[in-house]
Length: 279
Image (cartoon, rainbow, N blue to C red):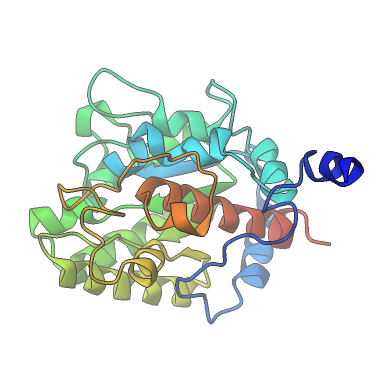
């Protein structure tokens, strides 16, 4: 059946045929699209500027691989990537800002070893303060993943919650959509990651924010053996096997950075379709 073979060979990926893997993390119980549509009414920053704020997990090159050149992305995912200029190498792309190497263990919007409080103040490896980052890039959306270094530094869950609430409040003051990313499990203290994430969900509910439940996606797939699979043997950083995919269910259970990129991109597709360009 040569005709069938030709048809199936042209662009018919799992994603384009509507059989994409399903999200397995916790979903928001609050109506964040309505709240975010209200928030962006006064936005006068850079359309399509999606910044990723965080520590070494965000700074690491594999963390944005799926957004930049992921294999077999769906039409909706590709549209979101074009909107945020994900594949452009330059300061007009917030994705580039997150992984562009600086000589001091950081990018323009993420730094190795930085805590939530340290991120707000700036200074880690020469990282700009949160205020300066927002003034320089005027983002439309900001994905925030901080917390593993707070756990290592012994920051309490309550203090972490206060820091993160301050961070998202500052983002909202500039009409930037904050996207909270839950803290992945950490071998040193998995119970603290849970406590931190309880604070994040409380913040998200209070402000009606979108959430990427990275912790939930990991635990749903690897509830007992996440170390050495989705989290590398150091017990902190995601694993980096094939971070650009394709995002099959099998691969999402093996590569922590692919899982992060895939979950992030899916949430950005939602934001674009429900808030930025609602039908």
